Length: 336
View 1 (cartoon, rainbow, N blue to C red):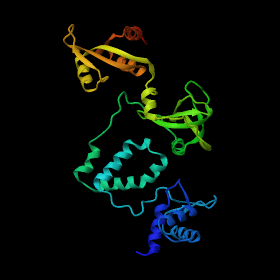
View 2: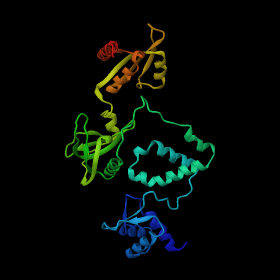
View 3: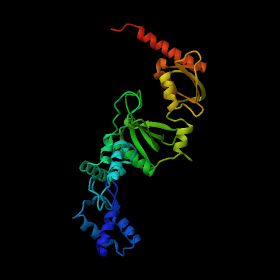
View 4: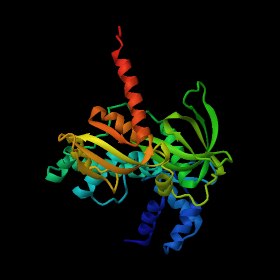
């Protein structure tokens, strides 16, 4: 293979997929780093020549001119996918798309199309795997709020490059949106609903902004203000940021029905959980566990109705007793 052909192949490899771009100067520097002895003017001629045979384009109206692979262009020189690789990519597309930056998804899309084509043309046991696995969300089937594609793109780019965003936000309970300047810190999904962990303007208090309540985003040139020493895993663990935390830990004592006992044997409430026989009722069991006080815990206890009875602490038992008394009153009233 000639040096010119190798240089052209390396040039095509350097060019990113839209919306990212690369200048002729950047291509020239990377080619020199790869050992090609060529001047910048020759690189520019190569780029224009290659654009007549490959799906690469440039934005002539912007200086410096940026080169890119067109959105949706097929992969160049991509080796054929094995069945296992095709299956991995197809499952990635199905379940992890919201977690990928929009630019990374655009780059991956042609390979995902290739993966789906591979799985359609083969009839081997591994290709049938995707039809025999599924992930089901806990709770009732609810419609996931729609997030504008522009919002995702801007949020992802801002997180990747640590830049501030200006956007319209629709707070709960307010009729009109408010214009915020947002410092993105992290992106967290609870179920299928995404939240941008962020600060506003120059303030330091953390906010959780729902992606589906955002509109008209603008990526600013201003660097995003980042909290010093921020660690997402520690923030989620220690601050219980998405767990509606209370004031501390609870020493929980429950009386549970037999089926819930079996459930908790497999899905423990805590490391120190103990399950004991109920001397007063052979069909029930006593569960003891040290857990974090949170609204999620209260929701979970409510959701099991009469299958679980809180014995301790007394304050939590009284709260649930009041809730269920109110609920019983609601259902005792005749409705038209």
